[in-house]
Amino acid sequence: MGDVPFWKRDPKPVTYVMGKATKNVPDYIDESLRGKSRRITEIGEPVLHNRASDVAAAEFGSPELRELIDDMFTTMDIAEGVGLAAPQIGVDKQVFVFDVPGDDDNRYIGHVVNPQLTIHSDGEPQTRGEGCLSVPGAYADLERPYRVTVTGFDWEGHPVKLEGEGYLARAFIHEYQHLQGTLYWDHLSEAEQQRTLTQRNQERPRVIERRKTVAAELGKEHPNYPETPAGGK
Ligand code: NI
Image 1 (cartoon, rainbow, N blue to C red):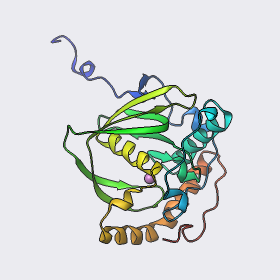
Image 2: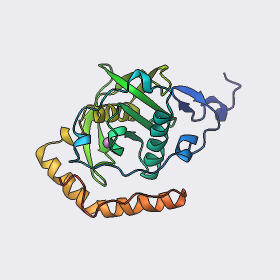
Image 3: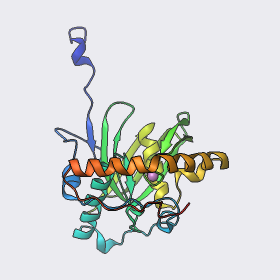
């Protein structure tokens, strides 16, 4: 080891696609380039507050499921998010996508259908700022477990098993909970819920304008957002 120059000792950041180290992954993956930009649902809309339906066996491998995942990647990228659950584009299905910069500087990309979450008790829970594309512009500190495992399926029905620590674990928990009808906002104290909604009211126009700008840069048509949040919270 003594002869290895210092710049070769530390492996460079790696991109993991569906848990596999993958070379030459572009900023915008094929799914994102193929998909359509959809309106992101907002806190108060019923689809966000009910458990999403399981994807049926017959739907695996279908063009509709492929298209849903494409649209989710596009919508997430345009909103500059790190994760998105199907109810966030108004679709009542157990699917989430993610593109997360890990605490280890690696990039983690993928999708999970019908996810199950296992929370591990090793590692200290972490309190960090968290936000949600469905509560645009608001952030709050929230404690989350340090390590989780997500199991489920890819869009063709192959089993998937993904491990997450730190920020990646936080993203997995956040997206999994979306599919149970729970927002990060639901975990906040009443005072923090009030504060984040005020923050949302102030920041929302800027956030939606930014989505419009990114969509234009990527050559995507952008959906209209109502002047006031559709959820009316
Ligand atoms: Ni969210």
